[in-house]
Amino acid sequence: MKLFITKAFIMLILFTPLSHAQQCAPWQQWQTFKTHFMSDDGRIIDLGSEQNITTSEGQSYALFFALIANDKTAFDKVLNWTEEHLAEGDLSTRLPAWLWGVNKNNVGNILDSNPASDSDLWIAYSLSQAAILWDDRRYRILAAVLAQRIMREETAYIKGLGLSLLPAPSGFEFDNKRYKLNPSYSPLFIYQQFSKLYPHSPWQELHDGSANLILETSKQGVSPDWIMFDTNKGFYFDKKVTDLGSYNAIRVYLWASMMAEDAPYKKQLVTQFAPFIKTINKRGYVPLNTYAQTGNSDKRGPVGFNAALLPLLATANNDNDAVTMSIQQKLMVDKSFSKSRYYDSVLNLFGSSTLDKRFAILADGTLQPNWSDECR
Image (cartoon, rainbow, N blue to C red; front, top):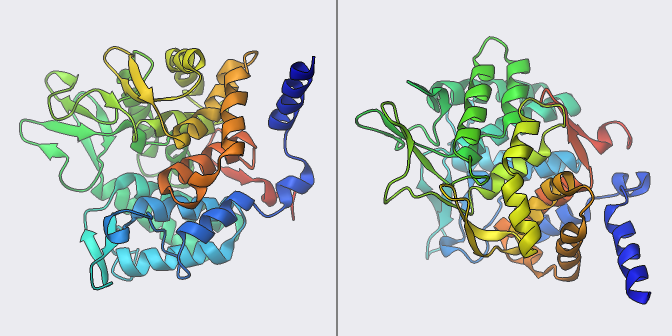
């Protein structure tokens, strides 16, 4: 009887929506992230990595978190650092380099100048929404310029696939009309929002083609990290680009869970990933590796993987919340990752804020953080 009461009490705590006071209070997890991973001038540091690297990915995610936390000071710091150090001082004239680091003499510089299209999308999206929510004209102009550059420099019309997002401006298009693509680089709600904001650019076409890419490459219920496409034979894997899904693919499920219930393709995606949800329910944790050709999986994923899948588990499980509850209990007990492990922390911020409904993303991709209406 005591065990039953304990479980019932925990279920009540874990799945009761945040109160008005909780929603409007400072977001403590974001404060923790800033304390441990963000420098005073706005650089997000991958602690423990060689050369204490910073990626455009980290900068882009921090912009989104700062926005849903209504933290304009942090937003501007991150944006300014990104512009100064990754874009040669002007984001309107070049896309940001994806990798920056510090050498043995403690001098920082760009390590790889090739941009990363997923990060560029998140930067442009966060700017576009910040422009609306904070009524900032500079953000609006910069978002539009970045969106235009992404469309011009990081997409390609691929025969048999249509308009597609390339992972970067160079390095992913090969001879004999072959391409290397990444399903996790395409949060569909960003494309939906850009098709609304920039109706004269083919964002809707990119949205539909990207949805098809995700669905076609995850027919066994799990997504690969990378996929090759040949205009003659379609999608394929080889020795270098295998069907492994892990640190990249985990975001495919996360982005799907952030979509509105009535968003295009949301129901198809939840249905498509049902076998993966079944696997997680059976094992009690999110696997580290999945294999797109068979749907098989192995090993135990890090804590961030579990956090990233919480929103989709909550949506898909309905009457079976035991696994969701177990995962969230563990996240509440052991929070050591939030002070030292960048990627786990990022996935947890996305997963927990989605599950707690700190924000909503409408079917057209519009971002609605709680503070925008309830906390003024």
